[in-house]
Amino acid sequence: MALKPNIKHMPEREKTDLHNEWTAADLEKIAAIEQTRQRNFAILDTYSRYLNEAPCFVTPDLMEEMTQHYGLTTNEAYLLLFANACGADPQEGKVAQTYIDDYIRPSLSQLSPIQYAGNPYSQHIHIPDCKFGRWRLGQEHYAPYEAFIWKDLTVTADYREIPNVGYFCEEFHFPAVFEDGREWMSVKPNEVETIQPAVDKASGKVVAFGLGLGYFAYMASEKEVVDSVTIVERDPDVIQLFRQIILPQFSHPEKITVVQADAFDYAERLMPQQHFSFAFVDLWHDAADGVPLYRKMKRLEHCSPSTRFEYWVEDTLLSHLRWTHFSQITDALRHRSDSLLGIHSCEEVKRQLGNKYLREWAKLDF
Image (cartoon, rainbow, N blue to C red; front, side, top):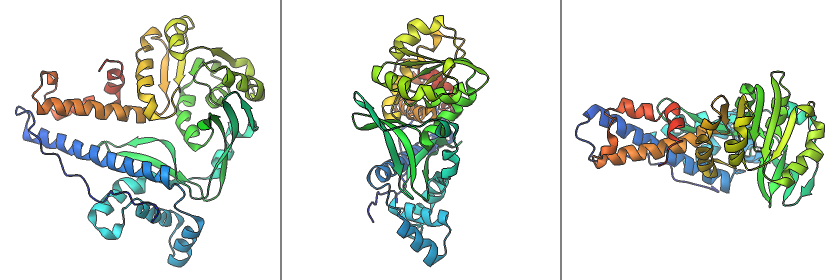
């Protein structure tokens, strides 16, 4: 195998000296959450290694062998190959089968290229190969059966976090923007799926933080209920690229205004005067660099209290915050800290691990 991360050994529940005022049942529930967190981290590490080191491990030849010689469906063949590459062979016991059933099986999706080729942006916007300063427009592609993250994290009621991995059975091309050779923005399934919730909610006077290829701006401007879209972007090369090549292809360019400014300065000083109905924040490359920027913008929401804010890949960002907060809680339990005042049961812990609480907690200094 090209890649064999170790996810065969499910982590044991951590035995700790927790706060003696809590009931045994509550402490058992906390231990179960800790076990789930460790399983989440194990699967995330495995998937990260697979996607970074061997995303094309599953090939057309392997798929043909599995489907033709063994009579498996495409989905079952892909599942077995993917799981085996991740070190989870169902023949090796209950632990591996549990990982497959709890994480790998629900994480994999075969995608249709027709669905994305028919996207309104893809239908109407042509992206040529060109360069502006350190930015370059071009085309990228997925190979047949190449694995990639295609939408935001799925979080179950018991805190399992399922990465959503997709693949096409044929080569799939998509436009992309590169900054100094690093892909910064593209119009591929991940962006289409993760931006769609914001497009669905946009109405009235809209502001978008971050320009990229103008995907959100285009999709929002196509809606009758959207009156205008103001785009805040600090990079002049990206703005020039957009104005010269992409914006002229919009069906409603009259709805679009581009402002060159720092997003946080604009949100604090200028945005309150504009009375926007809706704000979409997409300033980060991924969750790794997104959490501090997310928290910084969350702290500025009070400047525009009548504006509804939506954040790109917020479920993934909240996952980072969830486990940071959970670590603080369990550390306080172990050390009988006064910081646990107000937390007397596992039910209260669960409330504080919910998205509603975390969105407010993100605004605090910690």
